[in-house]
Image (tube, rainbow over the protein chains, first blue to last red):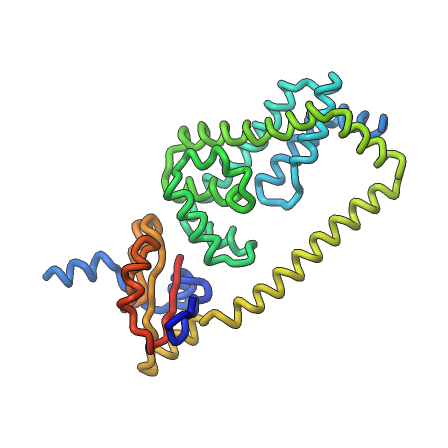
Length: 37
Length: 268
């Protein structure tokens, strides 16, 4: 997994844990609309 | 032997229903041995084979339908909860989602023969908003295949099953003790293995707090969102700046990732 890379680590609990911790998560559809503009 | 058989004949269908229901709802009590013994009893004319199949099928579909509704209610979050029981929750979530995405509802036909997928497939069908009619159809066929395999084995090898039961009967009270000790040893070995592997996995993972700290300090790693398409459609949010890479694109996109920065991957 770490072949050629400095370090690869999975995030404990994934996206759910990130959101549950109260951190901001950007909405991909909004990001895509902004990029198009 | 006569005592065991008498109990099974008296409470047989109730035992079969309870055992199948409990296993399908997630309690680690294997129902296959019960189905094999019940099949052997049916071969000797001591249990109605049609009633046996109907009761086991009802228990299996009932438990799976409960999971289906939990999946509809909780969405993909239920996968994480169910996968917490596995040794590697991330790969469990990804693996089951990928399998279901590739094979769809017909995967319920063989889901019962794949450990883990068995419990996860019904809530996954609910989370993916599959219709109840389609779910009950495929789940009933899959359940019937699984129940039928146990019952047919018991039916064909009823003499061998009879000899095994007779041996247990001669052991008397010791039989219960030996079985309980065997079960306790299996549970202990699983627990020890799980503890060892989860300790190793913990060392190799990054916590949310650690990632947030790195981002605040301006040492943000390359964050890669490896969720599959259905998970993305279900929840389009992502950690700010995360790159989206699906399994099909890994080979193509991996070469573009910087090799001098740490990489953090995440799924659901």
